[in-house]
Length: 197
Image (cartoon, rainbow, N blue to C red):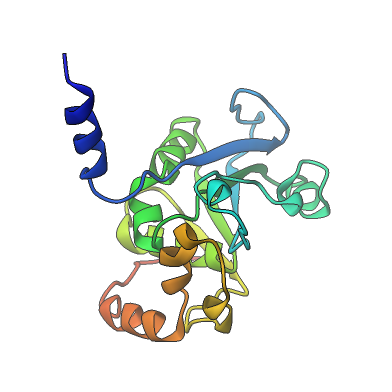
């Protein structure tokens, strides 16, 4: 049996913070993920930066109102696709969120359900998460990424004051960090399928 001291030290030095995340089906709304009959497309909506005043809320994934089943965006997309929403704690850098959250497992589960078209739609920093995900996991099964108002070149919002534990997340949205990130990722190319219309 591990002593309390050993357990505490193991958890303290195990690396970065744990990235808590949730993914829920909102159209059609189901407690258990279910692919609608003959539906081939799943759309995953990923929110962006959220101002946290207190440290206790930073690590908790929180869905935004526009991700709700009753939201106009979900209702509209739900006419042609099954809709899922993804939320994540904002207590780490983007790369850590992509690597250490459940996003990869969630996409794998969508593939198991039989969707042939998996689309990630990211707003603001959520678009950066979607982009990094397909760049880092090109064989995961995502077929399209849509970035909405994503700060690929950085954002002045990164200089805002926020809860201390949210600083790593904000730092990677800064103009300087994004410039370095874009340089490092310049060689990452995603092969697209040729489509005829």
